[in-house]
Amino acid sequence: MTPPRTPVLAVIGGGQLARMTAQAAIGLGVPLRLLAEGEDVSAAQVVPDTTVGDYRDLEVLRRVVDGCSVVTFDHEHVPTGHLETLSAEGHACRPGPAALVHAQDKAVMRARLDDLGIPSPRHALVTTLEEVDAFAGSVGGFPVVLKTTRGGYDGKGVWVVSSASESQVAFETAAASGARVLAEEKVDFRRELSALVARSPSGQVAAYPVVESVQRDGVCWEVTAPAPGLPEERALEAQRIAMTVAAELEVTGILAVELFETTDGRVLVNELAMRPHNTGHWSMDGAVTGQFENHLRAVLDLPLGSPAARERWTVMVNILGGSHGRLSDELYAGYPHVFARDPRLKVHLYGKAVKPGRKVGHVTAYGDDLHEVRERARHAAAWFRGDLGEESE
Ligand code: ADP
Image 1: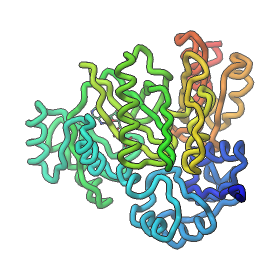
Image 2: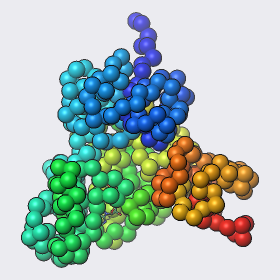
Image 3: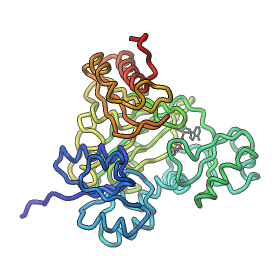
Image 4: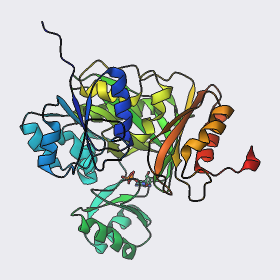
């Protein structure tokens, strides 16, 4: 039997997720071909075989995937129809369009989770202010949460409204992009959790420890692995939900299930992502096999690596561009301090221009003592943001 040849993997989208996928691909010796939005975006800086073009253009997609064994993604915005065409033309899109649509369209996702009996916040599609009023009435009143069904990210496309008249902006935003508006009860949550699994086309699944994620202004801020104080049966339930969704939707690659842990002890699904996810960045340094490597192994249908944590606690804090930081435009200048202070710290910078609130990197600390690990990670991220003055040393 002839041994399999090294495949070429096409990655659509040139953000930091593609960049860190490329980092894992280097380790595995797998060549990547990238479709990037611009010649200097995060992943284009490190992938020599880069095409700059528009992922909404089918001809551009065809050119990039030609000769590649597998196609995977940095984001979920490639039009479903284009992916169906590429699949029909024989390209292995992983995840495939039938799975990915559940990460692209929140209404499709909610309907499917309902069919599978997986718990979501109470929800309804709404088309008028009267329907928003009626929905609020059915869930005990305002405030309720409105979301555009497509196109939202990092909290853009999500509104908490206290009256029907505040809903206008949601309808206008949705209409402008041909999306619909989904109303959800405002969940009284204790915290947000995330359950990540990798699934291969053969059906092998690896489940990462369930993590706690803290969001600020709709953007992931800090992740703790495993989620502190999470009862084992609730962690198992979260993992079971993620494994069920991955299997039923036939997801290939990483699936992240964002969850709410409610104040009365239930877990409800917030949303799905079918790609490496910010709540899995801790695993690059904190798990035996990081999410980017397992994403590659999964989409290439190779046996998956252990998702087990290396140490008791791992804390990841995003480096977001600060608005006033002394280091804000030169992140490299933060290295002498953070590395000298903490030789066990890991830092990942994405090569992105620093703008207020933009994700430009992350830090990871791990160890036995949660309090100490958190302090180390928080200090380093704050230092890069420029939120610590000389006096705090
Ligand atoms: P995006 O697709 O932009 O990431 P999400 O649906 O994840 O949007 O919502 C962003 C944030 O808004 C969530 O992380 C959560 O903090 C809050 N949120 C979303 N839906 C609800 C809800 N039904 N109840 C309470 N808070 C919510």
